[in-house]
Length: 446
Image: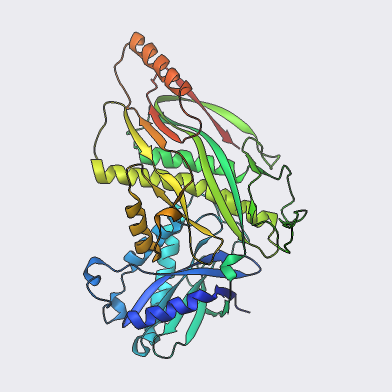
């Protein structure tokens, strides 16, 4: 039996509008949530046109000209704008009857290309029972006929399976949000034996180790540790005069020092370091689950992934910005300060779900609005942009060599003073100079 996708009714009208505007074909992404019980699609977003296509609403006449790399890059950007629990769960193509015959092969290639790209960036591991089917939706622009199939992205030889596509009104209005603020304090040593100090690569490695701690952490929901298979809303009070439960759970604590596996044992290793990177502060996290008897396990998993994704995405965006503005080979010999992008949330009409994005302090609202139009085909008003955090600071200091003991002590003292003055309410990434005579203790799990 194939999968069934429950689809927000407004998506049908959106696809219909695209079919009349773009010929001979248009592609796009499907956004929603997968679960063992049901799959939900709450957004469809067309692929943004390239510069040469912006002059008119036309695409190249043959499917061979579909730019797989362009669509994959779009999916990567959109995935950053999705809070926990939501993902790019498929792709669509609206094509003329002449092109419909070959559309399915094109969709299959795109699906596997997107999955490969997203997997490469991902720091968390999919669960064993994870749904690995992705939707390929084909719409005929002339007859409006819809054909939905799925491919198992864990199987490179996967063949198409039929799937049901069912529209449902107000589907995106019944979602439960989970909010929490997570304190971050990550120390990433730069080993003296390392041939070079690639800050981006070392940061990624440090975040990967930290992500395992988040995956093993304990979550308190309303002050309690709940069994995975318990219904999330069990024991929740309904709103006065309403048959529905509250749509938000904000009393969530993350205990990263506890481990749910008793077999884990920590050992210490001593490594000589010539520098370090520190991520310290607090991040705003949010995840959504559909309000249809959600399990605790589904909600916690969605929130864990948002915690991991939001910090990873910010670091990626920062390094991308540095490459654009300073070049990939720029070397800093003085301490410089950068600003990590702030997280913001934006609602979309008819939905209780808010989408996410990141902005640097000097970005104007119009830039955010343009990004939402380009990436999500959505107009955003100034008052709809909700900044979730204060400015986040990045302090990068180079590795210093050939410094005498007195200078080393002075710098170490200054560094400690700087750390004491840091604001715990923001995320701070600091590449702090530490010397070969100083040892860093890293803890690994057996």
